[in-house]
Length: 327
Length: 208
Image 1 (cartoon, rainbow over the protein chains, first blue to last red):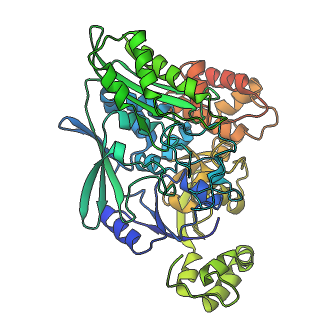
Image 2 (image 1 turned 30 degrees about the horizontal axis):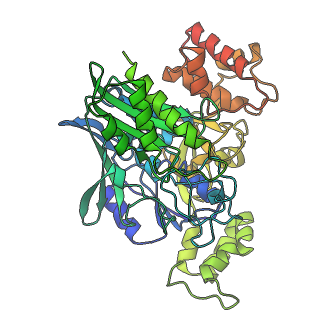
Image 3 (image 1 turned 180 degrees about the vertical axis):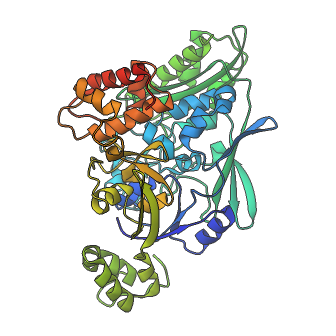
């Protein structure tokens, strides 16, 4: 690992001030993605600003929202009684991600900031527009079994590997960001980006900003929810396809519904057209199948990942069925 | 690449890039004190800063340690190379295998993905700190009894993870144990025996 300057701070204000002094500085939270990338020579910041002691670990209800500090660990959120009661979909998604060891140190903000990536991004001998803009995409025409089927560009077909973010986009979370001038808020669905012509940018965080907290509205979705993660082994693997589903049922009628996918796009993928279709309809297999077909309208396979064109609608249908059948 | 970097006369790279890539890096890694002094005399301040050693105070297996350390040294390398606690193993070195699992303030963590300097003031427990003198920890005894290993390389990480798994309350069924032990890979395939060992310790009910 190339050496770097290490600074530690205990306030958000000083962290932001330190960041603005050096454009090749990065915040260090859990470090589970960043340190790995630095070891492989994919990332080589001059300066790491350790923000683990900044007091942003709260998990609390404020009015009709849940606030989660950016430095709350994935374990703390997943095990929180408040989250299990009010946002069980988020707890389920978190437990489906990574390993117990990683979740103990990985933070909410760090989970959002983990790189959208693939094997070509990690292999510095291979072309990758995300790691080295203009060098080409090794995955298009290469090994692309794990790759995206939605929202791709000719520059990048990598996927965002987070499970947590799939639940958050489904739950209409908002992200609060801070710089030296103050705070701003953006919808979670607008935090991550599609690759387009700038695949080196995974998200819309500005280079003088710190993620401060998430605010998540409390929905009446605590019963009929399910996070279904389909992967190559039973646990501790990235999703081939995952689906976050929350249904509000009135009898067998769908009063409201949230649907989002992981493992299929450069960002967590919300299925708004499928949601609109299902709203007000009966929760039947036939309607679930139609909603799944709607979701696939703009899907595109790249060879090795063509199986996702079938696996994705099947995952949506299964997740809807599992959510519906929760007593 | 910063605009303030001066161009190196021998090529198109900036001076900082050149220094990062040059054999000086190896020299500094091998003979820190001498080479860092040389670096301080020859290179700009920002470069010298990169090699600053950071004071570190932490407790490992109930023993306090104070040192100065380069920020890039992982907790795993600090434990093995400086404290010679080689029970904690380097497997993949990328957080994928769990061989380097230790407890930091009671929580299991991959020490390969934690910088030593991030652990200022923390209490670390390694496999060497689990037993009481010559008396093995119940989990160590259970691994022996149930043949929870073959080559043994993953075993320290498995045991540290297994102890945490019970303490966390995630050892209530074989399925739950498998799920919450999934961050520890055993390529010999001792998984069923590892689960047997954890089940026995859990059922024994002793405080671990």
